[in-house]
Image: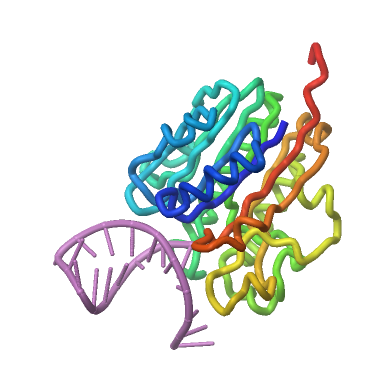
Length: 260
DNA sequence: ATGTCGCCTCATAGGCGA
């Protein structure tokens, strides 16, 4: 079973990229972020055999889940703040697995209410992820976390020292999720390996120079982590014409043992 | 400070968010 996640930076601008990639890689589930549109083109994915659900808003944010298997939406908002109207969270059940697509707030610039919103959002996510651990349902949280977990997850720590994605408060909250029992799928299979990024900004030919950051992640609950077989960052879509600034991450899980 | 995208509108340029 293959789960993937991709921040597409506008679903309208990237629709054909996503469709082509689905055909080429054929994942069972694809999480999308940064749809940047009020409408989600569900039909364009249904044609390829994917059911979908999406949480959208005009111009900003937006997350979706595409699935070959039947999908049941559980929750479209991150609990903990009824006044939060950003489209950043979607939880669904697919084949007995809780699948969550998140677009965690960027938080820049540091020292503003945007950074406070990011930290509060992470605290709310932490509470929710603790609840999910306790209910024992196999859970995969994927998406754009907007967190650079460690020094090796960026080209040069000095370049990110003042960025919200790399602040001690940000990284401590991400580490707490791992401490709680979740597994960073990519890092678990590639310990200590630097230079593997999921995002390169559009400036200064940063992709060609591999000056990027690893900020798109899959966190797996313990019961899913035991099934983790592979985790790959597919850089090919980032090299296309008119790319997103992010590229997809894929996780391969062993089939569930029968009777479990 | 700057670079580049994609979105939107008190729209064909400029602001916002990333």
